[in-house]
Length: 314
Image (cartoon, rainbow, N blue to C red; front, side):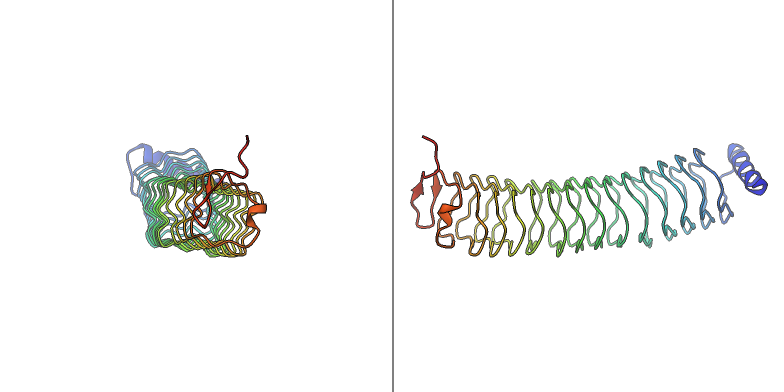
């Protein structure tokens, strides 16, 4: 313990005197909570099990440092360099990480819950096994990134670039993906319940067998998108363009398709109980016999082109 205290005192004193180069220092297990080491060089330093809770490490060089099992909860690392760092089981919860460089870093088992990663370049990174629950990733570059099996519950991904990212079996429930780029993203097995996708780019996305319960897909152009076997119960498609979309075997129970354009869509085998088709266009759509007895239709264009007012209130 005395050795730890002496090491901490030595580090802080030399930093306060203007020294910044602490490359390769052994700081294992030290309590550096709330310490300011901004602009320091801690390249290849040993920070295993170090307590860096609410520390200030802005523009700090931590490249090659060993931060495994370190606690950086609430720390500020804006514009720091963590390239080639070991962050196995590192706790970054509530940390400010915008602008951090994470080149050649393995994120598995790291905790980023409620961390701030806005505008950060994470292109091609592998987050498999990491916790990003409620993380802030506004306008972050996440293209070609591997988020398979990652916890992104309630994550904030407004205007993030997730093009060609791997989101297989990821938990994106209640996430904000509004205005994000999801071009060519892989959602196989992902949980997208209650997700907000308004204004998102969903070009070349396959939503087959996906949980989109209570998801908001209003105002999007989802022409020719596959929703085969998906759970779309209570999903919101207000004003959505769904030309030629395929809903074979999908669960649309109580979904809101008000003013949606479903011209040429395939709804065979879909559960349409309680679906709201008010103002929707179903011209040339393919539906099972008796579908009208399950759904709400008011000012709805039917497959044959006629307009039905059957469910309109007098």
